[in-house]
Image (tube, rainbow, N blue to C red):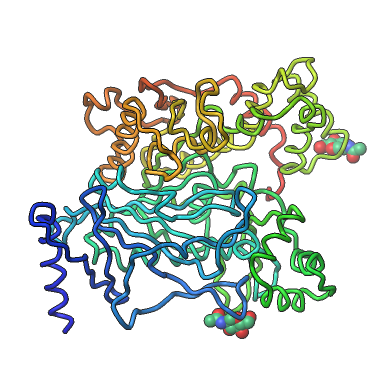
Length: 543
Ligand SMILES: *[C@@H]1O[C@H](CO)[C@@H](O)[C@H](O)[C@H]1NC(C)=O
Ligand SMILES: *[C@@H]1O[C@H](CO)[C@@H](O)[C@H](O)[C@H]1NC(C)=O
Protein backbone atom coordinates (compact mmCIF):
# COMPACT_ATOMS: atom_id res chain seq x y z
CA UNK A 1 0.00 0.00 0.00
CA UNK A 2 2.61 2.50 1.12
CA UNK A 3 4.91 1.43 -1.69
CA UNK A 4 2.20 2.03 -4.23
CA UNK A 5 1.62 5.52 -2.92
CA UNK A 6 5.30 6.33 -2.95
CA UNK A 7 5.22 5.50 -6.61
CA UNK A 8 2.12 7.58 -7.02
CA UNK A 9 4.08 10.52 -5.61
CA UNK A 10 6.82 10.04 -8.19
CA UNK A 11 4.30 9.81 -10.96
CA UNK A 12 2.55 12.86 -9.59
CA UNK A 13 5.75 14.86 -9.59
CA UNK A 14 6.48 14.02 -13.19
CA UNK A 15 2.94 14.81 -14.19
CA UNK A 16 3.14 18.16 -12.47
CA UNK A 17 6.16 18.98 -14.58
CA UNK A 18 4.26 18.35 -17.76
CA UNK A 19 0.99 19.51 -16.26
CA UNK A 20 0.74 22.76 -18.16
CA UNK A 21 0.98 21.16 -21.56
CA UNK A 22 -1.07 18.03 -20.95
CA UNK A 23 -3.69 19.68 -18.77
CA UNK A 24 -3.59 16.66 -16.47
CA UNK A 25 -4.31 17.63 -12.92
CA UNK A 26 -3.29 15.27 -10.16
CA UNK A 27 -2.65 16.82 -6.81
CA UNK A 28 0.78 16.34 -5.31
CA UNK A 29 0.93 13.69 -2.64
CA UNK A 30 3.86 13.43 -0.26
CA UNK A 31 4.71 10.58 2.07
CA UNK A 32 6.18 12.34 5.09
CA UNK A 33 7.34 10.84 8.39
CA UNK A 34 3.97 11.74 9.89
CA UNK A 35 1.94 10.25 7.07
CA UNK A 36 0.53 11.17 3.70
CA UNK A 37 -0.11 14.81 2.88
CA UNK A 38 -1.86 15.95 -0.23
CA UNK A 39 -1.43 19.48 -1.55
CA UNK A 40 -2.49 21.60 -4.48
CA UNK A 41 -0.84 22.84 -7.62
CA UNK A 42 -0.45 26.58 -7.68
CA UNK A 43 -2.09 28.60 -10.40
CA UNK A 44 0.46 31.44 -10.33
CA UNK A 45 3.70 29.52 -10.82
CA UNK A 46 5.39 26.14 -11.21
CA UNK A 47 5.03 24.93 -7.67
CA UNK A 48 2.84 22.97 -5.30
CA UNK A 49 1.39 24.25 -2.08
CA UNK A 50 0.54 22.41 1.09
CA UNK A 51 -1.67 24.71 3.10
CA UNK A 52 -2.52 24.42 6.78
CA UNK A 53 -0.54 21.38 7.91
CA UNK A 54 -1.07 20.97 11.68
CA UNK A 55 2.25 20.55 13.51
CA UNK A 56 1.19 20.96 17.14
CA UNK A 57 -1.86 20.74 19.37
CA UNK A 58 -2.89 23.37 21.85
CA UNK A 59 -3.88 21.80 25.17
CA UNK A 60 -7.65 22.24 25.48
CA UNK A 61 -7.48 22.09 29.26
CA UNK A 62 -4.76 24.74 29.32
CA UNK A 63 -4.49 26.83 26.14
CA UNK A 64 -1.99 29.12 27.93
CA UNK A 65 0.48 26.30 28.48
CA UNK A 66 2.89 24.36 26.31
CA UNK A 67 1.54 22.70 23.19
CA UNK A 68 2.51 19.18 22.10
CA UNK A 69 3.50 17.69 18.72
CA UNK A 70 0.51 16.96 16.50
CA UNK A 71 1.62 13.42 15.76
CA UNK A 72 0.78 11.22 12.78
CA UNK A 73 -2.03 11.50 10.26
CA UNK A 74 -4.08 8.32 10.16
CA UNK A 75 -5.49 9.13 6.74
CA UNK A 76 -4.28 11.26 3.87
CA UNK A 77 -4.13 14.82 5.20
CA UNK A 78 -5.64 17.23 2.72
CA UNK A 79 -3.54 20.38 2.98
CA UNK A 80 -5.78 22.57 0.86
CA UNK A 81 -6.73 25.42 3.11
CA UNK A 82 -4.98 27.66 5.65
CA UNK A 83 -7.99 29.61 6.87
CA UNK A 84 -7.54 28.33 10.45
CA UNK A 85 -3.94 29.57 10.43
CA UNK A 86 -4.62 32.67 12.47
CA UNK A 87 -3.99 32.77 16.21
CA UNK A 88 -6.22 34.93 18.44
CA UNK A 89 -5.23 38.57 18.06
CA UNK A 90 -6.43 42.15 17.92
CA UNK A 91 -5.57 43.58 14.52
CA UNK A 92 -6.82 46.66 12.65
CA UNK A 93 -9.53 47.24 15.28
CA UNK A 94 -10.86 43.70 14.95
CA UNK A 95 -10.58 40.58 17.05
CA UNK A 96 -9.58 37.68 14.86
CA UNK A 97 -8.44 34.10 15.00
CA UNK A 98 -9.05 30.82 16.76
CA UNK A 99 -7.05 29.03 19.40
CA UNK A 100 -6.55 25.93 17.26
CA UNK A 101 -4.04 27.75 15.06
CA UNK A 102 -0.77 25.83 14.99
CA UNK A 103 -0.39 25.14 11.29
CA UNK A 104 2.32 25.65 8.71
CA UNK A 105 2.39 26.04 4.92
CA UNK A 106 4.91 24.42 2.58
CA UNK A 107 5.55 25.64 -0.98
CA UNK A 108 7.55 23.35 -3.25
CA UNK A 109 8.91 24.28 -6.70
CA UNK A 110 8.27 21.58 -9.28
CA UNK A 111 12.03 21.15 -9.70
CA UNK A 112 12.35 19.64 -6.19
CA UNK A 113 12.82 15.86 -5.98
CA UNK A 114 14.81 13.27 -4.09
CA UNK A 115 17.49 13.66 -6.81
CA UNK A 116 17.40 17.45 -6.66
CA UNK A 117 16.97 18.50 -3.07
CA UNK A 118 16.36 22.22 -2.67
CA UNK A 119 17.41 24.57 0.15
CA UNK A 120 14.65 25.36 2.61
CA UNK A 121 13.67 28.79 3.90
CA UNK A 122 11.42 28.88 6.96
CA UNK A 123 9.63 32.17 7.61
CA UNK A 124 8.70 33.36 11.12
CA UNK A 125 6.33 36.30 10.88
CA UNK A 126 6.52 39.47 12.96
CA UNK A 127 3.83 41.49 14.73
CA UNK A 128 5.18 42.33 18.17
CA UNK A 129 4.34 38.85 19.55
CA UNK A 130 0.70 39.87 19.46
CA UNK A 131 -0.37 39.94 15.80
CA UNK A 132 0.50 38.36 12.46
CA UNK A 133 0.13 35.09 10.62
CA UNK A 134 2.02 32.78 8.29
CA UNK A 135 -1.01 32.49 5.98
CA UNK A 136 -0.60 32.63 2.22
CA UNK A 137 -2.35 36.01 2.08
CA UNK A 138 0.57 37.58 3.99
CA UNK A 139 3.41 35.42 2.68
CA UNK A 140 2.41 34.58 -0.87
CA UNK A 141 5.32 32.51 -2.19
CA UNK A 142 5.33 33.14 -5.93
CA UNK A 143 8.42 35.40 -5.97
CA UNK A 144 10.57 33.24 -3.70
CA UNK A 145 9.73 29.78 -5.09
CA UNK A 146 10.83 31.00 -8.53
CA UNK A 147 14.31 31.02 -7.01
CA UNK A 148 14.25 27.23 -6.55
CA UNK A 149 13.97 27.13 -2.81
CA UNK A 150 11.29 25.47 -0.69
CA UNK A 151 9.44 28.01 1.40
CA UNK A 152 7.77 27.15 4.70
CA UNK A 153 5.85 29.65 6.81
CA UNK A 154 4.82 28.85 10.35
CA UNK A 155 2.39 30.07 12.99
CA UNK A 156 2.81 30.45 16.73
CA UNK A 157 0.49 31.56 19.51
CA UNK A 158 0.43 35.26 20.30
CA UNK A 159 -0.40 37.65 23.13
CA UNK A 160 -1.70 36.02 26.35
CA UNK A 161 -1.86 32.55 24.74
CA UNK A 162 1.71 32.65 23.49
CA UNK A 163 3.56 34.72 26.01
CA UNK A 164 2.04 34.71 29.47
CA UNK A 165 4.93 34.12 31.84
CA UNK A 166 3.83 33.17 35.36
CA UNK A 167 6.55 31.19 37.13
CA UNK A 168 4.24 28.18 37.42
CA UNK A 169 4.69 24.85 35.58
CA UNK A 170 1.31 25.19 33.83
CA UNK A 171 2.31 28.53 32.27
CA UNK A 172 6.10 28.82 32.46
CA UNK A 173 6.44 31.41 29.66
CA UNK A 174 7.57 31.49 26.01
CA UNK A 175 4.76 29.18 24.87
CA UNK A 176 4.80 30.88 21.45
CA UNK A 177 8.55 30.30 21.06
CA UNK A 178 8.02 26.65 21.97
CA UNK A 179 5.33 26.46 19.26
CA UNK A 180 7.96 27.74 16.82
CA UNK A 181 10.37 25.11 18.08
CA UNK A 182 7.82 22.35 17.39
CA UNK A 183 7.30 23.78 13.90
CA UNK A 184 11.06 23.86 13.22
CA UNK A 185 11.39 20.28 14.44
CA UNK A 186 8.51 19.28 12.17
CA UNK A 187 10.32 20.85 9.22
CA UNK A 188 13.58 19.14 10.10
CA UNK A 189 11.84 15.74 10.41
CA UNK A 190 9.63 15.98 7.33
CA UNK A 191 11.00 18.36 4.71
CA UNK A 192 13.06 15.69 2.94
CA UNK A 193 9.84 14.05 1.79
CA UNK A 194 9.02 17.31 -0.04
CA UNK A 195 12.42 17.36 -1.76
CA UNK A 196 14.04 19.66 0.80
CA UNK A 197 17.68 19.59 1.87
CA UNK A 198 17.77 19.20 5.68
CA UNK A 199 21.33 20.45 5.75
CA UNK A 200 20.38 23.74 4.16
CA UNK A 201 17.68 25.15 6.37
CA UNK A 202 17.65 28.95 6.59
CA UNK A 203 15.31 30.45 9.14
CA UNK A 204 14.30 34.01 8.38
CA UNK A 205 12.01 36.45 10.09
CA UNK A 206 11.17 40.09 10.54
CA UNK A 207 10.74 42.10 13.75
CA UNK A 208 9.27 39.73 16.39
CA UNK A 209 10.11 36.89 13.96
CA UNK A 210 13.77 37.96 13.83
CA UNK A 211 13.85 38.52 17.60
CA UNK A 212 12.50 34.97 17.97
CA UNK A 213 15.26 33.50 15.80
CA UNK A 214 17.95 35.18 17.90
CA UNK A 215 16.24 33.80 21.01
CA UNK A 216 16.31 30.28 19.53
CA UNK A 217 20.09 30.70 19.38
CA UNK A 218 20.11 31.68 23.05
CA UNK A 219 17.69 28.95 24.12
CA UNK A 220 18.55 25.68 25.85
CA UNK A 221 17.86 23.76 22.60
CA UNK A 222 20.27 22.63 19.90
CA UNK A 223 20.32 24.44 16.57
CA UNK A 224 17.80 23.02 14.14
CA UNK A 225 18.80 25.33 11.32
CA UNK A 226 21.97 26.16 9.44
CA UNK A 227 21.70 29.85 8.59
CA UNK A 228 19.67 32.85 9.66
CA UNK A 229 18.28 36.05 8.20
CA UNK A 230 17.23 38.67 10.74
CA UNK A 231 15.22 41.58 9.36
CA UNK A 232 14.82 44.51 11.74
CA UNK A 233 15.14 42.69 15.03
CA UNK A 234 17.40 40.78 17.39
CA UNK A 235 17.03 39.72 21.00
CA UNK A 236 18.37 43.15 22.03
CA UNK A 237 15.51 45.07 20.40
CA UNK A 238 14.18 47.49 22.99
CA UNK A 239 10.70 46.05 22.70
CA UNK A 240 11.48 42.75 24.43
CA UNK A 241 13.14 43.84 27.61
CA UNK A 242 10.22 44.63 29.85
CA UNK A 243 9.50 42.38 32.82
CA UNK A 244 6.39 40.20 32.47
CA UNK A 245 3.24 40.89 34.48
CA UNK A 246 2.84 37.85 36.75
CA UNK A 247 -0.65 38.96 37.76
CA UNK A 248 -1.95 39.08 34.18
CA UNK A 249 -4.57 36.28 34.47
CA UNK A 250 -6.07 37.82 37.61
CA UNK A 251 -6.36 41.21 35.91
CA UNK A 252 -7.90 39.83 32.73
CA UNK A 253 -10.37 37.69 34.71
CA UNK A 254 -11.33 40.68 36.79
CA UNK A 255 -11.88 42.78 33.69
CA UNK A 256 -14.23 40.06 32.46
CA UNK A 257 -16.15 40.08 35.73
CA UNK A 258 -14.50 37.23 37.64
CA UNK A 259 -12.90 38.28 40.93
CA UNK A 260 -10.20 36.12 42.43
CA UNK A 261 -6.83 36.35 44.14
CA UNK A 262 -5.73 32.97 42.82
CA UNK A 263 -3.75 32.65 39.59
CA UNK A 264 -4.99 29.08 39.20
CA UNK A 265 -8.65 30.06 39.55
CA UNK A 266 -8.18 32.92 37.13
CA UNK A 267 -6.55 30.57 34.60
CA UNK A 268 -9.37 28.06 34.97
CA UNK A 269 -11.87 30.83 34.35
CA UNK A 270 -9.94 32.09 31.30
CA UNK A 271 -9.60 28.56 29.90
CA UNK A 272 -13.40 28.36 29.80
CA UNK A 273 -13.73 31.84 28.31
CA UNK A 274 -14.00 32.61 24.57
CA UNK A 275 -10.49 33.57 23.36
CA UNK A 276 -12.01 36.60 21.64
CA UNK A 277 -13.00 37.98 25.02
CA UNK A 278 -9.59 37.23 26.51
CA UNK A 279 -7.91 39.07 23.62
CA UNK A 280 -10.35 41.98 23.85
CA UNK A 281 -9.71 42.29 27.60
CA UNK A 282 -5.91 42.17 27.30
CA UNK A 283 -6.14 44.78 24.60
CA UNK A 284 -8.36 47.09 26.65
CA UNK A 285 -5.95 46.68 29.56
CA UNK A 286 -3.00 47.55 27.23
CA UNK A 287 -1.27 44.39 28.33
CA UNK A 288 1.90 43.28 26.61
CA UNK A 289 3.13 39.72 26.50
CA UNK A 290 6.71 39.06 25.47
CA UNK A 291 9.44 36.43 25.66
CA UNK A 292 10.74 36.09 29.21
CA UNK A 293 13.26 34.33 31.42
CA UNK A 294 11.57 31.18 32.70
CA UNK A 295 11.83 29.39 36.01
CA UNK A 296 12.87 25.74 35.65
CA UNK A 297 10.38 23.00 36.63
CA UNK A 298 10.72 19.22 36.57
CA UNK A 299 8.98 17.67 33.57
CA UNK A 300 8.47 21.01 31.80
CA UNK A 301 10.57 21.68 28.73
CA UNK A 302 12.02 25.18 29.16
CA UNK A 303 13.08 27.58 26.41
CA UNK A 304 15.18 30.26 28.08
CA UNK A 305 16.33 30.11 31.68
CA UNK A 306 18.86 32.95 31.82
CA UNK A 307 18.73 36.67 31.04
CA UNK A 308 20.12 37.20 27.55
CA UNK A 309 21.19 40.86 27.40
CA UNK A 310 24.85 40.18 27.93
CA UNK A 311 24.81 36.43 27.31
CA UNK A 312 27.14 35.20 24.58
CA UNK A 313 25.45 33.83 21.46
CA UNK A 314 27.91 30.95 21.20
CA UNK A 315 25.72 28.93 18.86
CA UNK A 316 26.36 31.32 15.93
CA UNK A 317 29.89 29.93 15.71
CA UNK A 318 30.47 29.09 12.05
CA UNK A 319 26.96 30.19 11.07
CA UNK A 320 26.40 32.51 8.09
CA UNK A 321 24.17 35.46 8.99
CA UNK A 322 22.34 38.01 6.88
CA UNK A 323 20.79 40.87 8.80
CA UNK A 324 19.86 44.51 8.67
CA UNK A 325 17.29 47.22 9.17
CA UNK A 326 15.19 49.78 7.34
CA UNK A 327 16.47 53.34 7.26
CA UNK A 328 13.29 54.93 8.71
CA UNK A 329 12.09 52.08 10.91
CA UNK A 330 9.95 53.92 13.45
CA UNK A 331 8.96 56.95 11.40
CA UNK A 332 5.57 55.38 10.70
CA UNK A 333 4.59 55.99 14.31
CA UNK A 334 4.87 59.76 13.84
CA UNK A 335 4.09 60.64 10.22
CA UNK A 336 0.33 60.81 10.52
CA UNK A 337 0.00 62.28 14.03
CA UNK A 338 -1.27 65.80 14.69
CA UNK A 339 0.49 68.47 16.72
CA UNK A 340 -1.47 67.69 19.92
CA UNK A 341 0.05 64.24 19.92
CA UNK A 342 3.52 65.76 20.07
CA UNK A 343 2.58 68.15 22.89
CA UNK A 344 1.98 65.16 25.13
CA UNK A 345 4.83 63.05 23.84
CA UNK A 346 7.49 61.99 26.31
CA UNK A 347 9.08 59.41 24.11
CA UNK A 348 12.71 59.62 25.27
CA UNK A 349 11.68 59.24 28.89
CA UNK A 350 9.25 56.42 28.14
CA UNK A 351 11.75 54.44 26.10
CA UNK A 352 14.52 54.78 28.69
CA UNK A 353 12.24 53.60 31.46
CA UNK A 354 11.40 50.48 29.45
CA UNK A 355 14.97 49.26 29.28
CA UNK A 356 17.07 50.95 31.97
CA UNK A 357 16.97 50.95 35.77
CA UNK A 358 18.05 54.60 36.16
CA UNK A 359 17.16 56.47 39.33
CA UNK A 360 15.29 59.70 38.74
CA UNK A 361 18.33 62.01 38.82
CA UNK A 362 20.22 59.88 36.35
CA UNK A 363 17.11 59.42 34.20
CA UNK A 364 16.68 63.17 33.77
CA UNK A 365 20.36 63.60 33.03
CA UNK A 366 20.34 60.90 30.33
CA UNK A 367 17.08 62.13 28.86
CA UNK A 368 18.59 65.60 28.47
CA UNK A 369 21.70 64.33 26.73
CA UNK A 370 19.66 62.28 24.25
CA UNK A 371 17.27 65.16 23.69
CA UNK A 372 20.15 67.53 22.91
CA UNK A 373 21.70 65.00 20.57
CA UNK A 374 18.59 64.61 18.41
CA UNK A 375 16.74 67.90 18.93
CA UNK A 376 19.22 70.46 20.22
CA UNK A 377 17.32 72.96 22.37
CA UNK A 378 14.09 72.48 20.43
CA UNK A 379 11.06 71.17 22.25
CA UNK A 380 9.40 67.98 21.07
CA UNK A 381 6.94 69.21 18.43
CA UNK A 382 5.46 68.17 15.13
CA UNK A 383 8.17 70.11 13.22
CA UNK A 384 10.74 67.68 14.55
CA UNK A 385 8.97 64.44 13.92
CA UNK A 386 11.77 63.23 11.64
CA UNK A 387 14.33 63.69 14.42
CA UNK A 388 12.00 61.94 16.86
CA UNK A 389 11.53 59.15 14.32
CA UNK A 390 15.30 58.79 14.04
CA UNK A 391 15.69 58.59 17.82
CA UNK A 392 13.02 55.92 18.08
CA UNK A 393 14.44 53.94 15.12
CA UNK A 394 17.94 53.99 16.56
CA UNK A 395 16.85 53.09 20.06
CA UNK A 396 14.30 50.43 19.23
CA UNK A 397 15.88 48.54 16.33
CA UNK A 398 18.98 49.92 14.65
CA UNK A 399 21.47 50.14 17.50
CA UNK A 400 20.24 46.81 18.97
CA UNK A 401 21.05 45.21 15.61
CA UNK A 402 24.55 46.66 15.84
CA UNK A 403 25.06 45.45 19.41
CA UNK A 404 24.01 42.00 18.25
CA UNK A 405 26.46 42.13 15.35
CA UNK A 406 29.22 42.74 17.88
CA UNK A 407 28.08 39.66 19.82
CA UNK A 408 28.03 37.55 16.66
CA UNK A 409 31.57 38.66 15.79
CA UNK A 410 32.73 37.81 19.32
CA UNK A 411 31.23 34.33 18.99
CA UNK A 412 32.90 33.75 15.61
CA UNK A 413 29.89 33.70 13.34
CA UNK A 414 30.77 32.94 9.75
CA UNK A 415 30.27 35.68 7.18
CA UNK A 416 27.91 38.42 8.31
CA UNK A 417 26.07 40.21 5.50
CA UNK A 418 24.68 43.51 6.71
CA UNK A 419 22.10 45.64 4.89
CA UNK A 420 20.15 48.86 5.14
CA UNK A 421 16.89 48.79 3.19
CA UNK A 422 16.06 52.33 2.01
CA UNK A 423 13.87 51.79 -1.03
CA UNK A 424 10.58 53.63 -1.22
CA UNK A 425 8.15 52.26 -3.78
CA UNK A 426 4.53 51.25 -4.02
CA UNK A 427 5.02 47.85 -2.39
CA UNK A 428 6.39 49.25 0.89
CA UNK A 429 4.29 47.16 3.29
CA UNK A 430 3.98 49.60 6.19
CA UNK A 431 3.54 52.70 4.06
CA UNK A 432 0.70 51.13 2.10
CA UNK A 433 -0.87 49.85 5.29
CA UNK A 434 -0.70 53.33 6.84
CA UNK A 435 -1.77 55.04 3.65
CA UNK A 436 1.54 56.89 3.50
CA UNK A 437 2.82 55.46 0.26
CA UNK A 438 3.57 58.89 -1.19
CA UNK A 439 5.43 59.91 1.91
CA UNK A 440 9.04 60.83 1.09
CA UNK A 441 11.57 58.18 0.31
CA UNK A 442 13.06 55.59 2.56
CA UNK A 443 11.59 52.57 4.27
CA UNK A 444 9.55 52.15 7.43
CA UNK A 445 9.46 49.07 9.65
CA UNK A 446 8.27 46.02 7.67
CA UNK A 447 8.40 47.85 4.33
CA UNK A 448 10.75 45.27 2.80
CA UNK A 449 8.14 42.49 3.17
CA UNK A 450 6.42 43.60 -0.03
CA UNK A 451 9.63 42.88 -1.94
CA UNK A 452 9.92 39.29 -0.66
CA UNK A 453 6.33 38.13 -0.61
CA UNK A 454 3.21 38.35 -2.71
CA UNK A 455 1.10 40.08 -0.06
CA UNK A 456 -2.65 40.18 -0.77
CA UNK A 457 -3.13 43.86 0.10
CA UNK A 458 -0.16 45.00 -2.00
CA UNK A 459 -1.62 45.16 -5.46
CA UNK A 460 0.81 47.52 -7.20
CA UNK A 461 3.23 45.80 -9.55
CA UNK A 462 5.14 48.50 -11.40
CA UNK A 463 8.34 47.52 -13.16
CA UNK A 464 10.72 49.34 -10.84
CA UNK A 465 9.18 47.67 -7.79
CA UNK A 466 9.25 44.26 -9.45
CA UNK A 467 12.93 44.80 -10.18
CA UNK A 468 13.55 45.26 -6.44
CA UNK A 469 11.48 42.10 -5.81
CA UNK A 470 13.72 40.24 -8.23
CA UNK A 471 16.88 41.57 -6.55
CA UNK A 472 15.70 40.90 -2.99
CA UNK A 473 14.40 37.37 -3.63
CA UNK A 474 17.52 36.46 -5.62
CA UNK A 475 19.86 37.68 -2.86
CA UNK A 476 17.85 36.04 -0.08
CA UNK A 477 17.67 32.73 -1.98
CA UNK A 478 21.37 32.94 -2.94
CA UNK A 479 22.15 33.22 0.74
CA UNK A 480 20.05 30.09 1.41
CA UNK A 481 21.81 28.25 -1.42
CA UNK A 482 25.40 29.46 -1.28
CA UNK A 483 25.72 31.36 2.03
CA UNK A 484 26.49 34.36 -0.16
CA UNK A 485 23.81 36.76 -1.46
CA UNK A 486 25.92 37.82 -4.46
CA UNK A 487 28.16 34.89 -5.41
CA UNK A 488 28.72 36.49 -8.82
CA UNK A 489 28.20 40.00 -10.06
CA UNK A 490 25.39 40.06 -12.61
CA UNK A 491 23.31 42.60 -14.44
CA UNK A 492 20.58 42.06 -11.85
CA UNK A 493 23.01 42.30 -8.91
CA UNK A 494 25.77 44.66 -10.04
CA UNK A 495 27.26 45.21 -6.57
CA UNK A 496 29.29 42.57 -4.75
CA UNK A 497 27.92 42.46 -1.21
CA UNK A 498 31.02 42.10 0.95
CA UNK A 499 30.62 40.56 4.41
CA UNK A 500 31.57 42.84 7.28
CA UNK A 501 34.76 42.38 9.24
CA UNK A 502 35.62 43.40 12.77
CA UNK A 503 37.11 46.66 11.52
CA UNK A 504 35.13 47.35 8.36
CA UNK A 505 31.40 47.23 8.76
CA UNK A 506 30.43 46.88 5.12
CA UNK A 507 26.76 46.97 4.33
CA UNK A 508 24.59 46.88 1.25
CA UNK A 509 22.32 49.87 0.82
CA UNK A 510 19.24 48.46 -0.86
CA UNK A 511 17.69 51.32 -2.82
CA UNK A 512 16.95 51.98 -6.52
CA UNK A 513 20.68 51.47 -6.92
CA UNK A 514 22.44 48.80 -4.88
CA UNK A 515 25.63 50.11 -3.30
CA UNK A 516 28.14 48.75 -0.84
CA UNK A 517 29.23 51.22 1.82
CA UNK A 518 30.51 50.92 5.36
CA UNK A 519 29.33 51.91 8.87
CA UNK A 520 25.71 52.91 8.37
CA UNK A 521 24.59 55.99 10.34
CA UNK A 522 27.99 56.05 12.01
CA UNK A 523 27.57 59.27 13.99
CA UNK A 524 24.28 58.24 15.56
CA UNK A 525 25.57 54.74 16.22
CA UNK A 526 28.76 56.07 17.87
CA UNK A 527 26.60 58.13 20.23
CA UNK A 528 24.75 54.99 21.31
CA UNK A 529 27.96 52.96 21.52
CA UNK A 530 29.19 55.44 24.12
CA UNK A 531 25.83 55.55 25.85
CA UNK A 532 25.70 51.78 26.28
CA UNK A 533 29.36 51.55 27.18
CA UNK A 534 28.74 54.02 30.01
CA UNK A 535 25.41 52.61 31.19
CA UNK A 536 25.47 48.93 30.34
CA UNK A 537 25.13 47.60 33.90
CA UNK A 538 21.99 49.66 34.40
CA UNK A 539 20.17 47.87 31.57
CA UNK A 540 17.22 45.78 32.65
CA UNK A 541 18.14 42.11 32.53
CA UNK A 542 21.90 42.74 32.72
CA UNK A 543 23.71 40.14 34.81
C1 LIG B 1 -3.03 19.81 29.58
O1 LIG B 1 -3.23 20.67 30.67
C2 LIG B 1 -3.67 20.00 31.85
C3 LIG B 1 -3.97 21.10 32.89
O2 LIG B 1 -2.86 21.91 33.14
C4 LIG B 1 -2.59 19.06 32.31
O3 LIG B 1 -3.02 18.36 33.46
C5 LIG B 1 -2.27 18.07 31.20
O4 LIG B 1 -1.18 17.25 31.55
C6 LIG B 1 -1.94 18.81 29.91
N1 LIG B 1 -1.79 17.88 28.82
C7 LIG B 1 -0.71 17.86 28.04
C8 LIG B 1 -0.74 16.87 26.93
O5 LIG B 1 0.24 18.59 28.20
C1 LIG C 1 21.62 57.54 40.99
O1 LIG C 1 22.42 56.57 40.31
C2 LIG C 1 23.78 56.97 40.13
C3 LIG C 1 24.51 55.84 39.40
O2 LIG C 1 23.77 55.34 38.38
C4 LIG C 1 24.44 57.20 41.47
O3 LIG C 1 25.76 57.65 41.25
C5 LIG C 1 23.66 58.23 42.25
O4 LIG C 1 24.20 58.33 43.54
C6 LIG C 1 22.20 57.83 42.36
N1 LIG C 1 21.45 58.90 42.96
C7 LIG C 1 20.56 58.71 43.93
C8 LIG C 1 19.84 59.92 44.43
O5 LIG C 1 20.34 57.60 44.38
